[in-house]
Every structure is written in C-alpha cells, then in structure tokens.
Amino acid sequence: MAVKAWSYWAAAGVAVWLAGAWLVAEQRQVARQVEDADTIDCLMQRLSPEEKYRLARLGNAEDYRPLWLAYSEVFPRCVLHASQWERKDRLMFAAWSLLRGEDLEFSRAMLRASRE
Image (cartoon, rainbow, N blue to C red):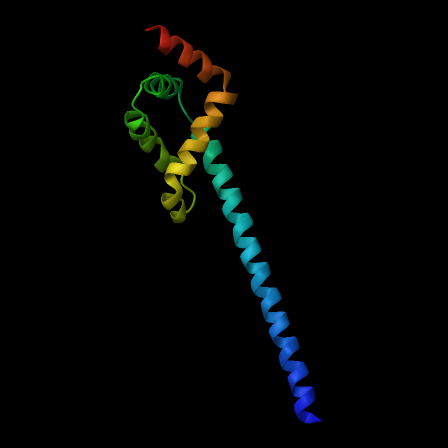
C-alpha cells in the first residue's frame, strides 16, 4: 500500500514539474517575441531621415548586400538581447519589409531615390 501511495505522489510530482517547465518555456518564448518586436520597431522608428534615404537608395539596387551592410550599422543600436544577433538577418528583413510597406516617409524616400 505504501508503494502505491508513493507512486501516486511521484507521478503528481512529475506532472507538476512538467507543467512548471512548460510555463517557463512559454514565458521565455513570449519574452523573445516581445524583444524581437521591440527590436523591429527600433529598426523602423529610430532611423534618421538620412538613414532612411540611404536605405531606400540601396534598396532600389539589384544587389542587397550593401543594404544589409547599411542596416548592420543600425542593428547594434536596437539589440535588446544577445540571442538576437543569431536572428539578425530575420529581424532586419522583417524591419525592411515593414518599413517598405508601412512607412510613408520611407516610401517617399524610395520614390525619390528611384528618380535619381
């Protein structure tokens, strides 16, 4: 009888531990998403008009390597967590896509750059 009770307590302990581990993992994932969203927002909002124009001019070119190099100069200002360096390309691409689609000032800069 004591062994049976012990096995129930052990199973309950494992279940509680698994639930706790799941909650911690979930919280870390949410925190990572919030940090990434803040970094993308920084990559869009904290650009000077000159930087926006430079990125727009480079974005009109056939080769995107100069664009990524220019964005790489901005990226260190916006990093919130060291793990974001591993996701740098994805974060910069997301910011670039949103910047092209949502920022009116940037759209004007791209139009101006394409006329030059």
